[in-house]
Every structure is written in C-alpha cells, then in structure tokens.
Figure 1 (cartoon, rainbow, N blue to C red):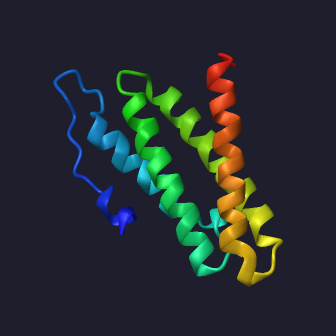
Figure 2 (figure 1 turned 30 degrees about the horizontal axis):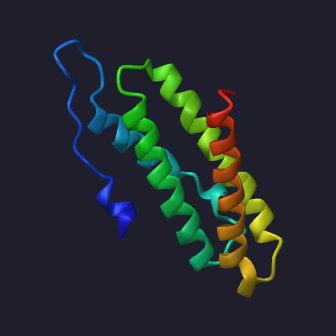
Length: 121
C-alpha cells in the first residue's frame, strides 16, 4: 500500500539541513499519526483520504526542498486542515456513500487549488 512506501530513512546533509527523504518521512508521519483526519470515516473512505493526503504530503515535501522547516510545517498543517475538513464533511454521509463523498470532495479541493495556481493566488 502507498502509505508504507513513504517511510524512508532520511539523512542530514553536510549543512545539517534535512534532506528531501527526511522531509518526506516527517510529512508521512504527520499524516499517519493524526487520527482526527479519519475519525468519522469508514475504512474505505479513510484509506482513500489517507492515500490522497500522503501523495500530497510527498509532493509538498519535494516542492519544499530548500525551504525552511517552518515553511514545510506550515504547508503540511494546511494539508492536514484540508484533510480534516474533507473527513468531517464526508463523515456526515451514510457509511455506504462515504467513499464517493470523499472522492467528490477531493476533486473539489484539487479544482480549487488548480484555479488558485492558475491565478497566482
């Protein structure tokens, strides 16, 4: 499963800064350790949300290479807030509808983020 593929042993480079691998590891840990992200979801819906979040966390960590730890932490906090919002909203649906609700909400999130990126927001 994708979640396990993100656990890498990171290294500290010669300047003492975290490498991309270490950032990816920390990003994955923060997602997987936050039970509040999926507390209201069925297993299938939770797995879908976690897989999406882990992929986004990995991309965020790669994009933040060279950025400060504070910047990476801020980006990951925003990602977790988005995931919590999706989890809460999808959790309001009937259990049999949660997977599809998570898909729809994540599609909305991605559309919003693409529009923001296009408009330089």
